Amino acid sequence: MLTKRIIPCLDIINRRVTKGVKFANNIDLGDPVEMAVRYAEDGCDELVVYDITASAERRPIDIGMVREVARAIRIPFAVGGGIATLEDMSRVLLAGAEKISVNSLAVRTPSIIAEGARAFGNQCIVLGMDPVATEDRTRCPSGYEITTRGFRERTGMDAVEWARRAEGLGAGEIVVNSVDADGTRAGFELTITRLIAEAVNIPVVASGGAGCAAHLRDAFLIAGADAAIVAGILHTGHTTISQIKRELHADGVPVRMHW
Image 1 (spheres, rainbow, N blue to C red):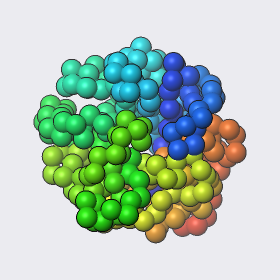
Image 2: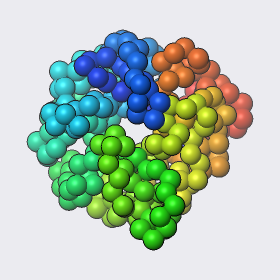
Image 3: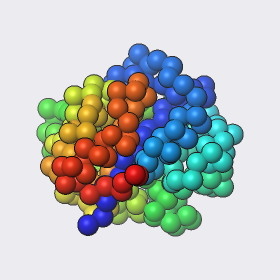
């Protein structure tokens, strides 16, 4: 059985790691390179680095920061935010990232998924999605609607339908970041994560709401996620990657141990 991956997320504003609740009230938590090194040394499987204001500010991602992270760690990491073209993707990969995450861009221009997959390989293209629960079952039969630009815009797109379409276009992985659960530490939104995991044949990453190891266990064993993103509980010292993995291992969840 493939091991389940634990992926710390570094949300960046002005070269500083930040964290909020439901994409609001963000606070400064530290230097991204220092935190990346700490998590890598503690046994995380991958990292994801999001320049969370780049797209909204319509500017390119901070390539210098990407290079610094790449020089400092020896594990795969994905980068998102401020990526608008194939040239942007190429710059990120050449700077040392292994994966590119597209979200709002993919909604506006779905062909970027196919173009990126053809140019760099499916394994490099990650679709990030920010679904929110909705009662509008006419437009969104799954009960979840895709939002963009950090929950600033609703799209009317059904989350499950979008996941299937993205897979068909060539996405190699999907990150399901629940807007409703983000930063709450109340647990992942298992329903939408499970719906996406059952709808596609590519890895699905649960994101938003991690508060303890049991939440990751549920994302893996109940929702069928292949990986889980954690942020606030690590950044504030509530727990560590190694502690989470010990608890998951004790619960029978296959994880790569870092003894």
